[in-house]
Length: 113
Length: 117
Image (cartoon, rainbow over all chains, first blue to last red; front, side, top):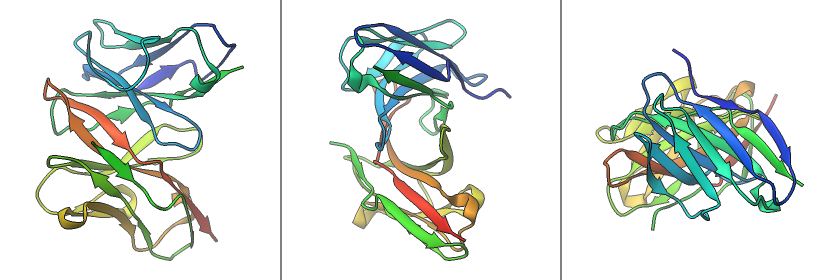
């Protein structure tokens, strides 16, 4: 069984640029959630996708957007990057059942200069 | 509002000593509670979870946690710590969204565990 994978591992961008992060969910999981983990902090929920639709959103501005594809993989897009967007971005997949936990990928480390 | 508090930012213990990491939560309904561990440069690995039933739950790597509703706590324990347990530990509470899927997780800020040989 393949776990959650994310790409790229590391990324360096400059302010104002746009970035796309990718996530492949665990086999059979059709729900994907994205989290931002700033240095020294716990992960913060960005949004969740279920059956290709946004299914909940945290307190992040609209320049954070996402997609989910028919194969349940997902993308996180961030426009107009700011220095504070520097963080570890974690993707988690799960089944749409109230008793199933979220399985996390290794994350993408984004640095904004 | 939902929130999780981990009052200890950093804990140091000797190898073989017992460990307790504290977690307090605020949640309006029956909480779904989790403990995750994160090693440097890694994602989050689930140690254990509580949904209902027995308030003492067993997890992987010899960890256990006890849910105490009266204290809004879900503390993580291990009777004898190994050097490989050095990592960051996160407590989280799960909140359901409209679709009754397991929606967002609210995380604490984490407790960094250092283990002395």
